Length: 86
Image 1 (cartoon, rainbow, N blue to C red):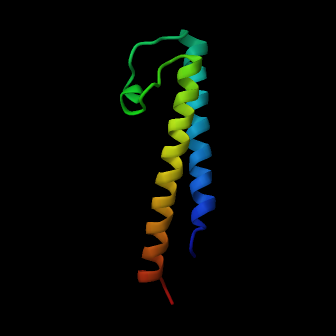
Image 2: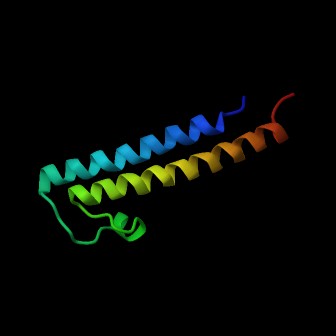
C-alpha cells in the first residue's frame, strides 16, 4: 500500500509544528519565559521559551515536518514498489 505523499507531509507538519508550540507553552506555563538558548534553539534559529519564540518554533517545526514527511513518504513509496508483493 502506497502513502499519499502530500497528505502524509501535511500530517507530519501539523503534528510537529503544533507539538512544539504546545510543549513550549506548557514549559512557559510551568517555568515562565526564558530567553536562554535551548537545544532546539540551536537547531531552529530564533526559537526560545517565549511567546514569539514559540511561534517561530511552530513555523520551523511545520516546514521541517513538511519536508521530512514528504521525503519519508517518497522513500517508502519507492521501496514498496521495488520490494513489495505483486
